[in-house]
Image: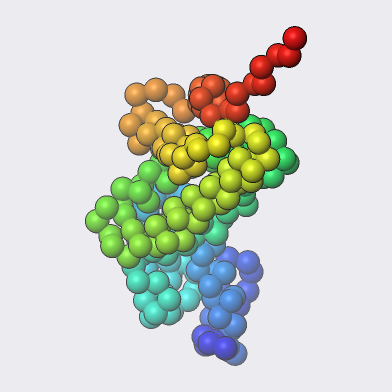
Length: 210
């Protein structure tokens, strides 16, 4: 196991001392410090030098583990928010979509500028763009499509509906309001999005029998 000189103290900062530290302790201290910087100062303020100094870790370790400060920023964001973004499965797809999207909008209400900053920074940082695509966008889409597939199999969505497009319609609309803020991003907007969606994708009601 890779270790780094000096012993740790506390939950977010490793203080110099004798001994060697476990790699997971160094990683935890680094991500905790990076998240604090990210959410207080933004992605552009996060540098390897600043994180290393505040976390009490070696800057060379950061260069070894993350290809760019942007990639570290994304890792810190994803680590702190993955529970919030968990996709529920209660057996009711409309309820689950509402719960997930409302949780997402609540996260954006608190940290939207940070997320917008990561998306913006990714346009000029190939390493961050790759991390964002591989470890966030692709995985989040797969989770959503998997849940929608189960709903279609259960008869809650019409056969033949393009599930990837549903993801774009819902989450794409939320990101549009985050990045192009002409209209407010609210839970009421989420409810209207889902209501409009289900007018088009819900299975047809059976014809009444005489």
